[in-house]
Length: 502
Image 1 (spheres, rainbow, N blue to C red):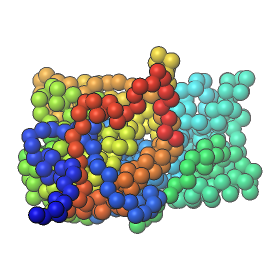
Image 2: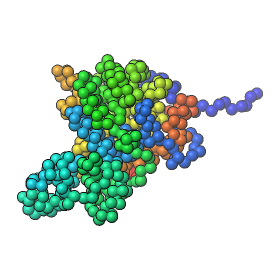
Image 3: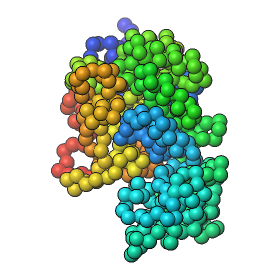
Image 4: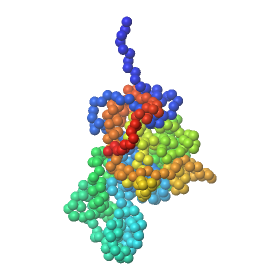
């Protein structure tokens, strides 16, 4: 009699789990642990956003008007990721946002306002949200820098009727636009100065004050390499639509130095997008173009055949998106990422898991199911770098966060994303909300990345490539979690607790 134990069969392969007719979200599934023979700090999170654009970390800021503008773009690039600047503004304004992010090599962007020496500052609004005003001979960018006025100095000024030239600080020491944080700090220390002007081609592009330098230096040390192009500038992406006037928008963006474009559509498998992909690849062959959004293998194959360099996956999974509810179309994000990745990798096309990310575990799941990067909206909204002003709501400090399918965003032009710009009636596929103050992405993203590394360690993957190999070789196993298992897997059974991960 043969007493040889049968082969150990524990859990399900992804292939088997995702072929049973169920649409799974990230919370529905759980990975089983594997074998560890390396330290968490040894996990390599480098990846590709698209065919030709490498990233040190797999994080992408979503092209939403309450998430990605200049400040987010420079911060994400400094962390080793990238941001996609939204298109819910005129083409020239979007190009200006792009240039502002690329005109420095530090994650500090004040978007300065300008004034002439004869001007009188009558209200705080004259600072346009910046901590200071740059004073030039013309009162505009490009003029000769004569000095600056900090908001603090203006606030302490008793006589608000004085002209700017009467109390402005003298021009600070200048530094090249690509000076790093240590160089700027060194100049401040040597000159005993509270500010340094960043200069490019003889023009001052921004002013960096000591408070901002000390703030950023107090955050966790950046381990990953910054996302920098061959020209030494931060790499920044931009969103465009699929209409005829988006070809003119693209021309502005290319002139501004865009590094990758994302065709922004809720349903990417359309004749409009297929034609736009072919147009971009024919007119700008050196520019990578990312298509989407898609959730099925069929959709993905059509865009791959058209020539996309990356695929954006997700439909209705974002916290502010109501597409699945309103239109009865979409797919659970875990299923969508696995299905699309399983066909895209055969053509060497990286997949961006877009939506549904609310914690580091979701990032681990998305990447382990085949995605090369994750795109985040609500995860980054409410941060210091997100657009908009903080307000207090029910005692909490919050920032506005809205879906690009909300009626409020559609009035700014995002209805083209939902192919509704020519419709007589506008139907919302998103909502407007608020998210609490998260602080700076420069502070919480390094902790998030460390949690992701520990997740990869637990499944025995020392890199993204290793995780994908384990998945496709059927070594990596998963199970579906019941509702009770999901409750058990989170904090439970406590009267109260403090939710703090760093």
